[in-house]
Image 1 (cartoon, rainbow, N blue to C red):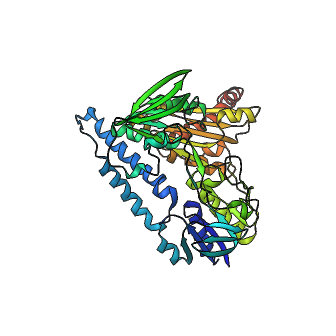
Image 2 (cartoon, one colour; image 1 turned 90 degrees about the horizontal axis):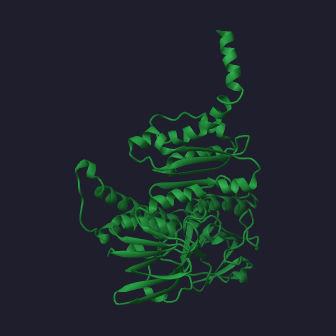
Image 3 (cartoon, rainbow, N blue to C red; image 1 turned 45 degrees about the vertical axis):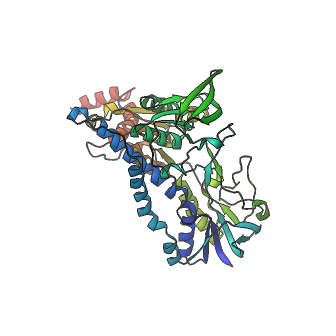
Length: 471
């Protein structure tokens, strides 16, 4: 009998396994693939960021005419992807089977299924656990589009093994994954078109962020919103996308389709009902705030729950579950101060409510903004496109913060600390920001709170009289 069995060797599952084993719990982890690391290491965060960096370097080399330098020639995608895989291989050592076995974790490679609420069957063997954690992640959702299956489309699980750069690509889906990869290929030299069924891209972002991102990305690619892909036909060395836009039927010829039309949970074959586990209408596992499923002995974490599908969220889920599962605690997961980044260029930072969400929830809100063109460091870098927005209530509590700009995911991090500690915009403006720093954009935005308090209304009139009296 194991103290805890983890199903899935991705970010969340590895967090649980390492934490539990380090605390002395008898721990097992089951992974259906041949190696640990999950989607993030092999098909997501790591290779995509390596590709983005390579694409940005190539893009920069092609656009430094001011220095009298002109880079030309077609990109060798095989060499680019070799560099990408070098990043994966380096990080892979940290997630190796050998490392986890050295921590005392029993590693099983195979596809498990529940036989009862504390029992799993894998590779002809029955494993029993006092507690079981499902951390199987998600995979790309394939929409029911006629001819799509025959089109030999790419996804995040196949793109990093490619060696031939397409001249033309059509992306279905304008969420973070689709746009990050789309911009990368556009910067490598591919003619990119993105189809989005909704009215805008990046549907979870603040409306102003959506608008600015659209404006920037459309300089590098074609984006078709409110587009319904109806059919895909293949033949004669090309693929044709049939879609409707504004009620009109249109077609686009392309060399390759990249599918990024949402995600679905990896629960197939787990026999969840046998374990007393309930899913929602989309197939994601239902959990309460403690991450317990309908079966109190089984927890679910990460993408398989449908809650904020990010690696760092899965990691936080894992930390919480180690405590709740091993020590029978009921600590609750909070997403109030949970940030995320979208790694297009320039980057997008998001935490908390959008302005639209805050306006619906609160009677009175205050919005503070700074344009990066007014921040010296961004002007010096010739990267002054973008802005920062902070939304608060009337007492200064930060309800949400958003930014689009060079490196925004890094220099907006102080907001996370302030929100996590339950502090206000006053505390954010009270920090010292070295000059000339990109974070001066954040300083300028937060300082507007005091400028409005001190330099408007009756305060200047009163202080003027006090200064004269003291003088």
